[in-house]
Length: 257
Image 1 (tube, rainbow, N blue to C red):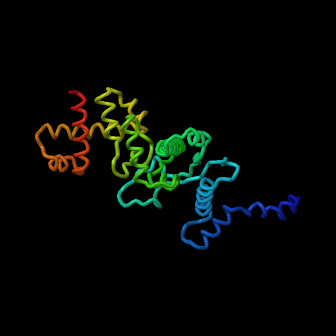
Image 2 (spheres, rainbow, N blue to C red):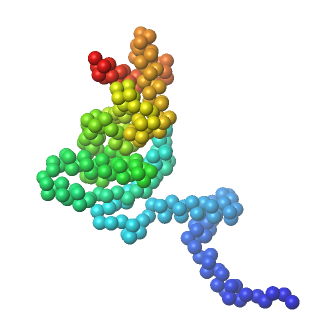
Image 3 (cartoon, rainbow, N blue to C red):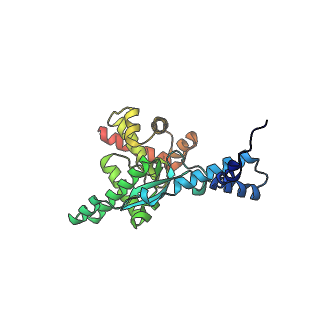
């Protein structure tokens, strides 16, 4: 005798299919019929849902003074022709206003110093969550001019010898960067190991080795009597990059005098 039909399951099982993933898979299948079968459609739908969930945060996740922002992934550096829309984006939660910020106002801390402290905090928080902020991000968050943000952070880096983790320094975006100088200074002026430098500058070991190696090559070419243009041609890099490393070398030489 055959198994009795499960009428309850038959009536209600369809309710389990009423999901956002299935709705997306159905829509994708209708709009892009050649994309693949049901397994591929479900995979695409699940990827979309995952992105949406990471970019949307319930109100319970945010506290007073916090804001949800989208940064560029630390692990997705720029390349020629790649736009922000083609870059891995990472949602982060940032402390836009804290009790310490309010206390700084009460203590009459200068507006420039308060701005610097906020910008540094936001950069650090984004980095710890796997993202980098640009000067434009900071300018929009803090209602300031991006050039002012850039000058304040660069000045702080020069004064302390410590890299502030933002896109300008870790992804080689923008001008006025100081990370090459800091990396070379820590190695040749302070005698620190590659591991120490990588940890203190938020760079990978490979990146530190790359910068130090490029500095060594530029310096070697200069000692051979080559001009800036010849060095750039030989090493396959820009004249401005060669000049940047030569300026680092001059500063290191002055330090040894």
